[in-house]
Length: 365
Image 1 (tube, rainbow, N blue to C red):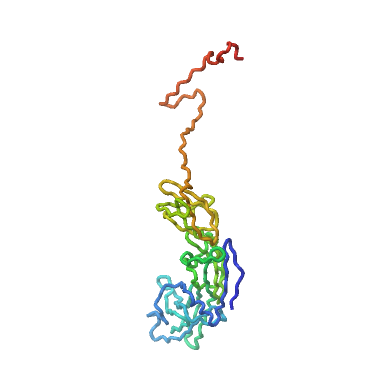
Image 2 (image 1 turned 30 degrees about the horizontal axis):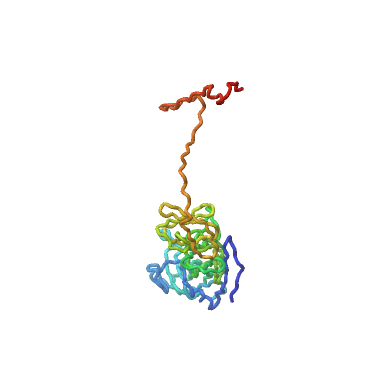
C-alpha cells in the first residue's frame, strides 16, 4: 500500500515523498537498490569471539539476538552488524570488542556478566546494556532500531530527467549547532541509493552540476518505511560557443566567464564549447579570444537545456586610454616645489589691444 504525502516546498525545492511500509515481505524494497552502509568493509562473519576474553573454565551461555525496524515489525534478515563490548574500558580508553557478527539474527556464546550490545543497519543503529546471568534462562534479545530508508532523486523544471552523474546529495541533521552548522550524516549520496537512517527529520542538500544549482529541503524519515523523495531543481544545462556566424563552428582557444545580472562571476572555463549547469535567472557570457572580448546576455529557464552562441561581431569596445590630466588648483602666490621652476607669467594686454579695432578711442566705461 503506497501513500503520497503533501509536497514539501523549501525555497525552490519540491520534495515528493512516497512512503513504502516495510512490513512482512516489504523489506525487499531495500534490496532493489544499491545499499549504502556506514561501517567499513569487514570479513563476513557469522559470529566472532575475541580470543582471550573468556576465562578458562568459565561456563558460556548461549545468547540469541535479533533486530526490528519497529517494535511490532518483523526481524531484519540481512544487512545488520552486531558488536558486543566489555563495559570496562581498556588501557587505551576504549571499550574492548568481545564479539561481532554480520547478517541477520545473531547467536553468541558469552560468559556471565555485563556487556554493551550495538547493532547497526546502515546509518541507523541502537545500543543497549546486556546482562548475562550465570544461571537460569537467557532471554532472546530484541533490539528495536526505529529506522527507515531514504531514497533520493531529482528532476529539472517540471519533469526533465537529470543524468545520475550530474546529481549529488548530502544528508545533514535537522538541528543547527551553536556554530550555525548542521551535523553531516552522509555526503555524496548518488541518486537511487537507499540510505538507512534512524527515524526523524533530515536536511537534504541536492547539487545539480558544480556551479550554483543547489536546492535544500527537509524530509521526514519514518520508522519501518522507505521514503522516496524527488527534488525539483530550477536549473538547466547550458553549452557556450564563440562563432563567427550563427550556427558556425565553435572557435577554439576561448576563455569564458559567466556572470550573474549583478556582475558576480559564477563560472569560468577555457574550452571551445564548455557546458555548465546554471540556476534559473539572467546571465552574461563573456568570451575572450586573441585579446578581444565578446559578450552576450542570456536567460536560463528551468529544465530547458540549450546552446548559447556568442557572435564575434558582438565585440565589446576597448576601454579608451584617456589623455586628460587632473590639474590641481593652487592659490596664487604659492611658491613651486623644490627643483621645479614656475612657468613664466604671460604679460597683461596693453591698452591698445583692449581698444576695439577701428574704434575712436572712446572710454571703455
